Length: 306
Image (cartoon, rainbow, N blue to C red; front, side):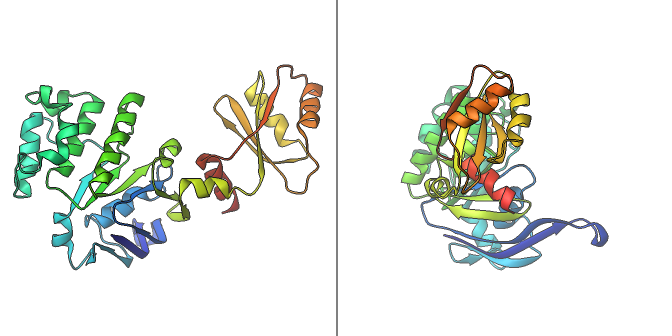
């Protein structure tokens, strides 16, 4: 459904250009939930703006459903739904007025495609006469998604859709995306949240305008090449400093209430030795567990290798 080939994009004047995308290539299958995963500034929004025909690449090309993003931009816009990161609907219009407006832009009606948005819109329908600017974050999110879907797009682009939204609304949102996938819509999601990566069929890990790796979340985690342990004790900041000096440590970093420790290959290591080492440093309540890598662990590992 989507094919991106060697796209690059820079911003700024000739002498002060900032490279936002550096020779990016990937493809997205029809009916797939594909995630662009990375921190702010990694290039996710630039990719979205190029694929939604709002921005021209400096080089490279992309196709959506066989249509070229530059030559066929008018036809592409008819088959896309786009939900930008910032709430961009008309805040002085009511919920119903916003939805009617976006339906009219695509020469359709709410009634014609109501089945597609029914599960989402029913949750905000009791507030249909309320102005969009007065809605909560979760309600704004549902309205924006309804407006992006009202013309029954083939591809849906969601740029950091759950940023600033409470955990319950985040969970509801991803359940809605699964139902949309079942209707054959191809979904591309950009998010900085590593836990959301596990909800995608495949993901591309991004940093500094480059794609570090593309695969399923499961394969990315299982390909972590080193042994990984989690350590918890009473003083995490001091623990971090101490672990960096432990002979078997390849890398260590804070991870919630634990510190994750990557152990060097070909190192004679066991938990008892590490526990004794920490006790010598006056730590008392020590917990050490061998663990499987998460997407975030894999992302940190890839960053260290690049």
